[in-house]
Length: 163
Image (tube, rainbow, N blue to C red; front, side, top):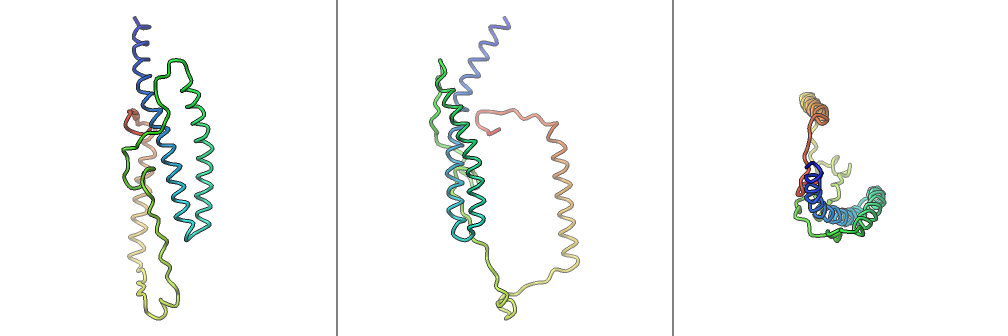
């Protein structure tokens, strides 16, 4: 009886993996396009940062090539019924791998403008600095608490959420 239910569960798992495999290939393609677009936008105003984005892109590209190779091998298995072609992502919000990056160059303030009074620069007071330090300490404490809780949480992966 256990053997029968394991086979039934295996069939369910195969149908779920057929969906997940296409999610992975879609994400790999979208991430590659996103990093390429980020590099192109940053290149205009900060070539050094663009180089770092390119290094990150190349590192991910090496892993992506490995993953795509393994997915291709999986697709050639006898009985594979899925599809390894990328689909269309439904997660298109800002900051996702399918969004178009909108990287703006930083505003550069020239020291001449500050001295001539063109730009009004407000000095930080001791109270402002103490308030900022308190906020930083609070954020750090929250981060540590979340980090301590992570090993105790169990997250169930579904077909719609990345894991």
